[in-house]
Image 1 (cartoon, rainbow, N blue to C red):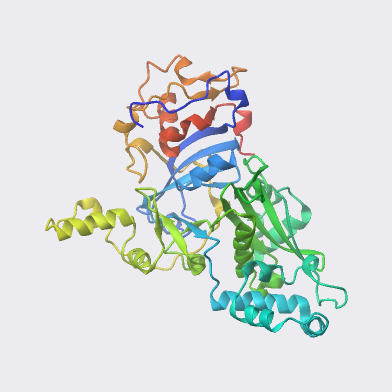
Image 2: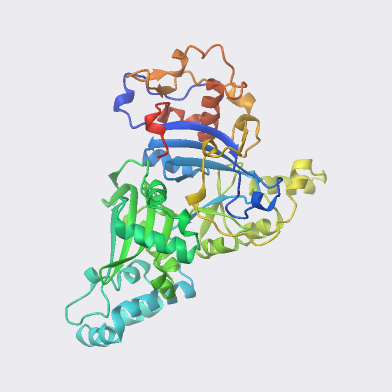
Length: 479
C-alpha cells in the first residue's frame, strides 16, 4: 500500500523464513515474437514487451501468487508480459478441476486410449470374471467419472491376472531430473511434431528449460488429510516400459500448473495432448489442488485454441487482476479487440450509456481487429534481454503495463526494509543500508534503486516482504 511498509523480515530472522530469491533483469522488447515471428518479417511496429527476472530458489506458495499476476517461468527465467504492448497478447487461464466436465470428444479420446491399452480380449474376459451390477453399469453409462477413467487402463489399477491387457500402461510422478529417456522423447517431439531444426535441439536446452526449476520441493497436507506435493515434477507416461510422453508440471499449494507437454510421435494417433490435459486435471481433482493452469492463452494463435476446450475456465483481467469467466462474451471481445480487459470494457460501456460516447485514444486503439492466424511457439524460446544484443530496453514504471503501479505510486512505497544478498556480504542486508539508497531516485532509469523499484512493481509492493533480491553472480547465472 502506498506510503506504508508491509511486513518485512529483518536480517536476523530472514535465514529462518521461507524467502524467494530473485534477481531483476529488466523490462525489454524481445527481438522476435515466437508466435507470429513479427520482427523476422520486417515489421518493427510489432512488439513483445515483458519484464524479466531470474530465480534459483522460489517458494511454491509465492510463485502461485506470481502466476496469479500474469507471471510464468521458463527454467529459472521468470517473465511477465505486457498485454497492451504486444503483437500477440498473453492471457492467464485457470480451470476449476472439481467443476470440469469433459466434452464428448474428450471422453471419446480417453475411452479410445483405454481400449487400445486393454484390448478386446481383456474387455471380454474382465466382463466375464468381474461382472458389474446393473446399478454399476447404469452409473458408468450416465456418469463419466474422470478420475476412475484416467486410471482405468493403468497396470496398478487392473484386477487380476488373469486377464492380461494388450499393453502395460503406467504413469509416475517423478522429480524433474534430466535422463536420457526423457531427452529422447523431447528430441523426437521437437523435431517431428514441432518441426524444429536439429541444430536448435540440445541436451543443454532441454535441461535448462524443462529440468532446471527454481521451485523448492516439499509437501503440504490439505484439510481432508490428503498430502499434496509441491515443486516441479515430470509426469511420465510409459507403454510396455517405454517412455512415450512427459508432462512438465509445477505443483503449487492450490494448483497444478502445466509448463510443457511432449510426446513421442509414435503415439500421435492416440491423442496424447487430450490425454495429458485430462490426466493433469484429474491429478488436481484427486489430490485437492483445485485449479489447473494450462499456461498462457494467445487468442490469435490457432494452435492454442485447444486450451479453451476445457471448461469451466477463468481468465485473469490484466488491469484488476480479478478472474472472469471465459465465456462467449469474453471470447467475442477477443475476436473484436486486440487487447482485452473486461473491467475496461465495462467502464467503456458505462460511459456510452451515460452519454459520454467518446473514447480516449488508448481505448480507440484497442478496437483494432486482430489479423491472421498465428503460429504456436512454446516457452523454450523465451529469452531475457541480457541474452539478446538487438533487444530494446524500456522503463517499466513509465510503460503503462496493466496491473503495474505507476512511477508516482512507487515513489510512495517504502522499500528500505527489502532484504538483499550480494557477493560482498555473508549476511542479509536491508536496501536502506546501501550507500546509494538516499542519493538515488527510482525515476533514474538504469540505476540500482530504479532496478529494485521495477522488480517490486512487477511482483507487487504487497509481496516484497516475501523476497530477497539476490545480486550474487553465481546464483543468477542462466547456465
